[in-house]
Image 1 (tube, rainbow, N blue to C red):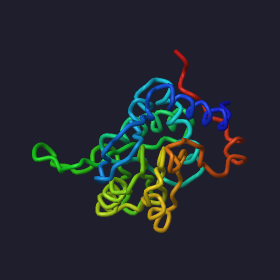
Image 2: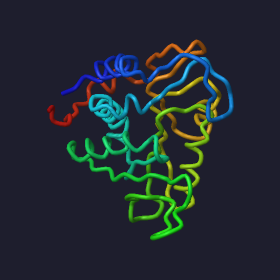
Image 3: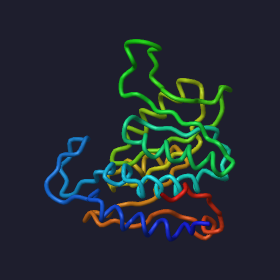
Image 4: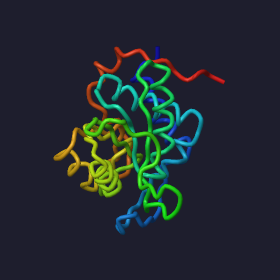
Length: 207
């Protein structure tokens, strides 16, 4: 059994230790200037970070009725992969998928890769690593809805206070695990900790 509060505090520590939180002068994908930057892959592509992100997000999905989990390529893929792995180990298998930035021009010509539910109208979750303006999530949601599915849950590993998360909250059941304030300081934003602490999880085996 893994205590969710322990996972959250260790994940917060590891984000700093791994070099995922950077200070300096940066241009964001939105074109805005920022004095800090979140290089999430420095966290999600470490063995421990991958497992922590997967466990935390799977805990948020374990009691929902979603039938698959996905997001945009490439930032969400490490998290999606770990969530699908943990879902299988915990008896709630959730297939994974990702939305391409551009539709393939060869082979299957797919814009969505991976495993969506067979039944149209099924509920799915969309996840992302970092929310700034929310553009990546909206693009993923649009592709999934166009394919005939319902996005019933949106989860971000981390949200910046740039307005994107607030806009998503108006339209979706949206949750962020972490957030940064205007100074770039990281804090845990996940609600409902008392409920989550009671959920046992089967972790990936230690190596």
